[in-house]
Length: 273
Length: 305
Image (cartoon, rainbow over all chains, first blue to last red; front, side, top):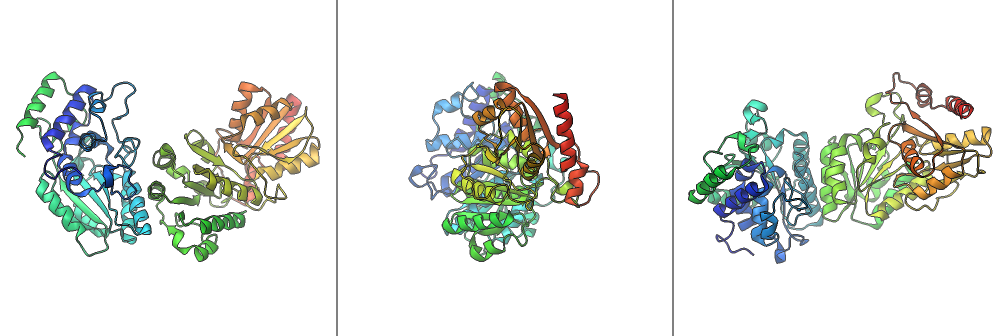
């Protein structure tokens, strides 16, 4: 296991994302930066991988349904030792394995996502499977707030509540933006917590960049005696960690040049954690 | 045919507790036996097909063997992307049952009719497409689908047109089955689903020397067998209750054009929706798929070739 409070340093994770984004000349940096703390806490304190095996039959399932944030997950998986450094330093090279969106052929990635609204349902199925087998495995599905425009999310939410999948937790990365603008401007979501509560989820909202708060919220949701599925709404900042990227949706699409790369590295290195 | 389907499903599920049936709130009386015999293996996912297919992928990932049931208009057509991305991409053993394919729901109109489902799924890698013609082929297909441990779309069409075999046929995946013997050098029929029975009836009445082949598998299809059939024929007539675009006729033509060029008449739905409603027989007429219309097409084709 990774020693607690040692690995998954968010500065290291953000630097890994920047390195990948620069070497691969890739987009979706903001999507990765909003979920760094969420992933750090999950991998450090909650996800159980017996024998450090990404395919162990008794593992917890973590599904990155918003595949656009996959660079953040690559950075974490490298720390688990399931990806070599060369996989990241050769990001987007011809013939390389790590794609710009989640692909289940990568160790530790449970689903192939990027088309939105898929991973949530697969996760509900895996949670149902664990329930049918009577195991104590937990399933997490991390979705974007833009992603929950998709209908299957709400189909799956109905199912998870109806079948009392208390082993299932959706984590919503509420960074307030989707591809073409703010979620408010594109398709008003209202209170995401209230929506999941109305579907029968036990729900909490948390500062998605406060690791202590995230950890406490996840622990509290799991400790509930109810049979409800769980929803953790994480209020986040798209592009978190680099001031010129924060809540600036152009970093959904913009590629780093040498200058912005250096500026971003410097911001990440100096950031308070 | 549906009884054979239910029997096979119950038999397979009783022998393997990992088998699950997921239905999108369809199959009212069809699953009475299943629910009685295997209640813990029955999941009604509600009227929510996209989520149902995603869940089936998740269940397959953790070792279950889901059968996903719906009307062919919804399973697979409504959920093509879930089949592609959640299931086929990772070669998960999920079996999709699309019931009522073709014009079974003749009175209900286009929403419940399905004549593009094969075309919609044929280009998805790692997905096999089965299309049984009678209750015996259903039994064969269900066993093969289960034992293949692969993603399968099993298309069930009109179920009461009569048998084309007298026993459950032994079949390899991809093989064509002889439904009527014939001699070489003349016309040969290749049909799938409901139109195999029609092909046999027409051949017996009008072309006694013509062989009739049933194609219970659209993909994969045994290309060597197709080549052999085409080489032994002057004219091949392919029949299906599906669009002439992208179905069995296309599959046969693709093989033939490369390896055994022969005149091929594709009989199917001519790239149009139904205009009116009526009985199943009425709708076949509207689409030129009743026996007399097909016979006329064949007559004209033979006269021109």
